[in-house]
Amino acid sequence: MAVAAYIEQHPASKPTVKQHLAAIRMLFDYLVTGGVLPFNPAASVKGPTYVVKKGKTHVLSAEDARTLLDSIDPSSLIGLRDRALIGVMVYSFARVSAVVSMKVEDYYQNGKRWWVRLHQKGGKFHEMPVHHKAEEYLDAYLAAAGIATDKKGFLFCSAYRRTGKLTKRSMSRWDTFKMIKRRAQTAGVSERIGCHTFRATGITVYLHNGGSLEAAQRMANHESIRTTKLYDRTGEEITLDEVERIVL
Image (cartoon, rainbow, N blue to C red):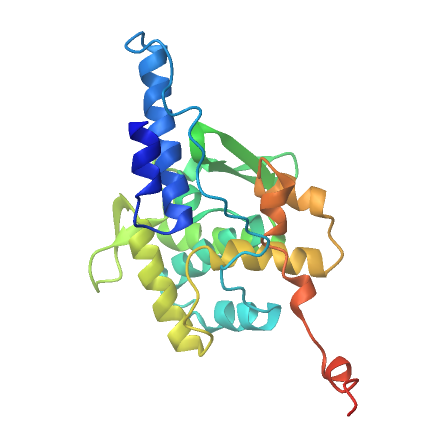
């Protein structure tokens, strides 16, 4: 009853309430597993109904994504790093947390192709071949950074302020977010974008070019295909010809 009352009186939005309820259930599951409690008192508590059929993440068009990547100056080490990082996110549908936690050894050769190993949520690993453009960006960055032999080092390292030199520490998600905002402003593309934009953009462009939803689910490492559908914005385009059909 205490858990139900807490959920009913929660002042936050429905998604936040559902997230908090999930956290409470996980806590009590842990206590039940450890023998502290005989059962999970939150198991029968129902959260608010909230159905999402369309994701809210801002998606770039293929042209804007290309404009952004081409606007990054490849003559500097930081530019090469940023271009490679964005390239990995957009071409592998990777979450920003998975990319910034990559080690140099997570970009490896398997046969004639190069692959990336992504550290996903829940301690899972997801491996997939690298798109040729992302491979080009990564190779240029590794050659300039000189870190190819440091297999245990972080792949995308932070920089010493404005010196243009890299540290041994990995970039944080906040560092990546600020970098994306700067790059978007420079390229003149929508400043509404964030780190997750490139995951959504990659999936949308893939589906727009004839890719299957099932393959996109595997590539994005989604547990449910319903999650992948949230990133599908291919049906949002309304052409001028369709609008002109409204004849009054």
